[in-house]
Amino acid sequence: MELIVSSIESIANSAIDVLPIVIFLFAFQRLVIGGPMPNRKQIAVGFLFVVVGLGLFLVGLEKTLFPLGRLMAQQLTDPEFLRDVVGQGTSALVWHDYYWVYLFALAIVFSTTLAEPALIAVSMKANIVSGGAIGVWGLRVAVAIGAGVGVSLGCFRIITGLPLHYFIGAAYLVVIVQTALAPKMIVPLAYDSGGVTTSTVTVPIVTALGLGLAEAIPGRSQLLDGFGLVAFAALFPIISVLAYGQLAVLKNRVSKSGPDGRDPEQENDHAL
Image (cartoon, rainbow, N blue to C red; front, side):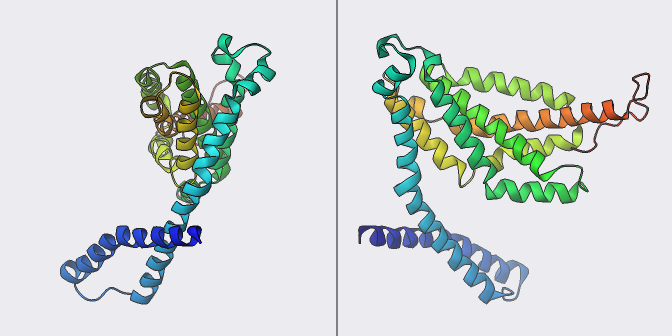
């Protein structure tokens, strides 16, 4: 009964959140463009699906994904578990003794990123617009690897307590260098890849993992250390997609080079 009540409340709150969007769109159509909104019944049904789906999704986050992320972080950092793994007292633990945390973060974020609906849609559009030069699975895997590695590195930051800006600053320096060297056709897509990664599936898991890890590690603050993993999940796919483009160009040059090792066509943007 409590679940039903919370679901109804969440759907009602979602309707209130979506209502300004509906009012603005219909008012803009009437006052600026002129005339009634076309396909009003279809749009109304669509908004209904959005409201119900968003409300139930938020309930699912609160009841399942957030507790699951905290639970996994607490179990992987539990003193008894760590004693069994490293064979020593927890007082002598160092950052590399938490390797199961890094592996779990890499695996779960890689999986959730592959399942991101926004990433799937962008990959398909990029494949169509590029005439097949950008592979759907190639782009999805590249983004997923970047997100997984980034969140693992973020977990390392939480465990060690190192400042966040060190990691973000160093990563952006890498992005700047890669941007100058990567094929031009992949650069805008790489920058957008970070945005589509941090969407409906990945963000709840990453946020719950960060908060749970900060809560489980002694001396860490949930506010100061628990947040920030989403920044890693958004930034490192840019690096991985730019690297994907650079590797594709290198492979293309090697395949097209003649017996003397020269690339007669000097092409930069092929078969990503």
